[in-house]
Image 1: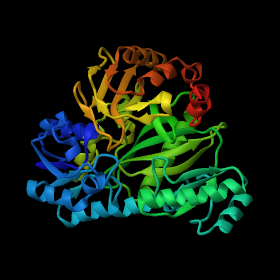
Image 2: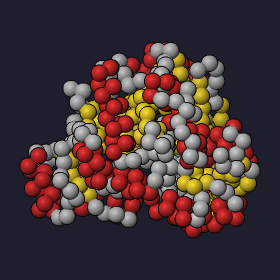
Image 3: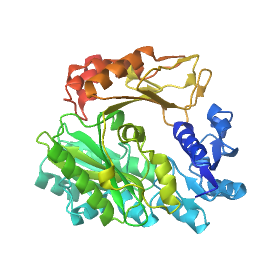
Image 4: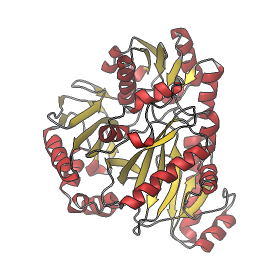
Length: 450
């Protein structure tokens, strides 16, 4: 086992990893930018090192500075968290070249699965259903129009190196295809330094189902069941839950088996998530693999009792999984609400500022993962998520009731947050009955407010 680990991230996930390390008796080094100097969570690390100014490109995305901090602190491994460099194969390669273990998958698996076009090819090899789409990357307008007209509109233009909804555009005719293609390429080039895109059939009002995976370096791969992440705005998740409501057991088993099969095909180890779209007839299609820990990983921890961060560390240290597939059971129901510093009434515009009042909920069945407290100043430089509110109960109905209570107790003042929309969602009949899809927020809440 490692003696000292560096956390190459910030905020909630940095604190989550710090706590897991302390539980395992591992010393932990945190890094921070000038925007995060003095952040309360840094005090829980054994050491904290400044790696640059507020701009992520000069700090949390600066590989050389992170490696320098790791070498100065004499760490044996780096945990990348999620976002930033977590899916950067070059970063993983540099870490290992410097004799520092990267807590994540191999560089080869990251490259093969990180590019969505290549991941589709792997899925086909593993006999995993994929959304119908272009045979390869789209190189010009005429090729795009030919592909779209052949498969029929609407289609989805997607960045091959994309994520988080960036570099993605829906086209319903030739005109919107042309404009969407240029916009997607430009956005992908800006966000990922890779403007390559491909086209796939746009599935109307799908559900978003993802499978949590764990694999060790000894060839063992298991799934930890599914999460339903259909409640989104602008392709960014708002609510996640497990088990997925109204999902037939036969479909659940098949989709989990497909995810494991794909991971084995890619030679994948450590934590990862295989994501699928589910249409109205319960047909599912592979869309991508997130080769890292997910924001919503606590949902799975609550229903399986398995600490995913500790498993990541143990796997990176070369340990075998201490359980097999038959040992993993799914119990009860968990729901997560992402609490973001955003104004839902103003098209989810991000807000920054000082939290003047922070009154978190409590009681049985509630978990709150957060790095903020009263007096904390939310910077404008990074992702807007400030907390993850989770509940666990024996049944979904009880979990919804528990979440309603938790949200009613949760008071945040000084900034706008997504708490109000979460309260409305928990009261919505479509959500209560498990009848939501990825367009639910746009079709209902946002349209009603406009």
